[in-house]
Amino acid sequence: MKLECYILSESITYSLHREREVQQNSQLRTSAMRERDAGVGMRIYHYTVIRIKFPDGIYLQGTFSAHDNVENLFLFVEKAMRHTIKFSLITAGCPPLKRDKSTLKVAGLVPTATLNLTTAERAEYTLLNDEMVCRISES
Image 1 (cartoon, rainbow, N blue to C red):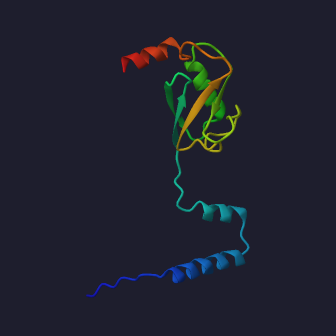
Image 2 (tube, one colour; image 1 turned 90 degrees about the vertical axis):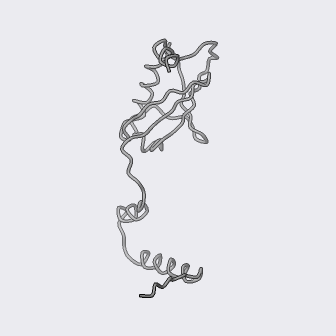
Image 3 (cartoon, rainbow, N blue to C red; image 1 turned 60 degrees about the vertical axis):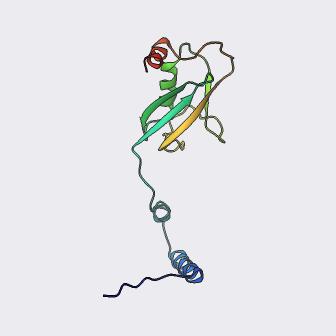
């Protein structure tokens, strides 16, 4: 049995792609159908790993459900802090996260994200509580 290999030229590939686009655009499609087609090949994540970098260079890491809200992330950080101070969580190239009920998935923090914690005050000490500092020294 002879095995044949088909190599498509760039022009054939382009024409096939263009033909598919024309066919899809000629149909009346619901927004759900368009979203489904746009999401083909996208993975569904149930959990996310979020790392928060404190000003002193220490990272706090937590695993959350992708459907948890941003408020839970802020509560997680507050629980790990030594004192209650006002802070912001910033992702690279984006405005600070808003403390609201939107999900981590909607906020773009799935499947993983690294956030920078910023405060208005300059701390001479670590912002983490004693329990977290002990965990760092143990590992």
